[in-house]
Length: 415
Ligand code: 7TS
Image (cartoon, rainbow, N blue to C red; front, side, top):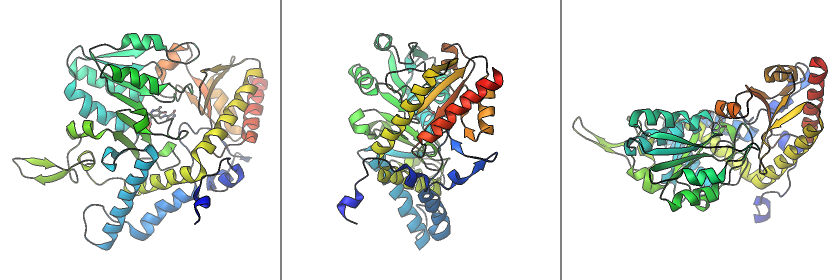
């Protein structure tokens, strides 16, 4: 292949993208599927489906164990997947890439192994008012166990974090900043780079929840200089049950293992166990082998499709949808940050979001309605739930037109 052919395209060929997703051929209630629930989970391209079935059909065996050919091939593919993730995040070393079940498990690992042993009573963990529950509850649990306190950066009416309040929250007792990179409920893109710099200026390490950023952005953990970064495979066109924790080697080396078992040891006697080096120290037991291989295929798919091209296309769809929603009487958009990605959360006067989603479904339009595992965000904006449309590479302006028609249909039905 020539160098020119390996360069990612600058603009997205959406027709070609759509042709790679078999599920988009489906009809729902007799209507073509318009899948706009991508923030919950994204559909999978054929390349990912093939990578997973290829693993099981051609070379599957347990990893890091056998000397037989299949185990060696399987191990090479699994470790190759780790290298693909390293490149995707631009981490310095594969030692810093831990495979987990997803974002949730990655954050729980940091809470249990990094925060819990370090926290003293009255120490503080700072998070924001727009976190997903998976970046709230693990810290609450660790606070209960240690006597530390959770402090929360408030959110402004437009969905942006209050930066002045953020700076004032940081103090000599702050032990960690845990921050959502992109909000799943509002779409807000947080200004993580200056916020990390502010925290680091006070010696405070930072964890980023990248579950909603990894599907949309080109990431560089070294440029961000974050201490930990978490994301999920199923939101980046890969399988569910696999995700990633990136951690700086200096922290990971200093942290005790999280779970004990096979694969995370160098030697075991009843008196003493020597742990394996990074990253294996944090991967006890047989991992999700085909999941890691599928995730690598997904990240390869994103890179070859062009992450910037995907991002530009999604931004166009979001702006196209937002402009139309603003024109519809009785429709209110929740989350109007200057910088947004992927997500349009909204309400229709007098209609419960669950009814919106149910009527949409009859038109073949899949969205999510509810609190989006971000109940404090709902409380802050004084709503029990929102309806949420979220875009991916394969969505089109026609999908948005169908969405807008569905909104008018709901208004007619409930008007
Ligand atoms: N963090 C954010 C920002 C998320 O959006 C999600 C999932 C998670 C963490 C948890 O990821 P998991 O893969 O470990 O479950 N968000 C959503 C959502 O918005 N709708 O369904 C799942």
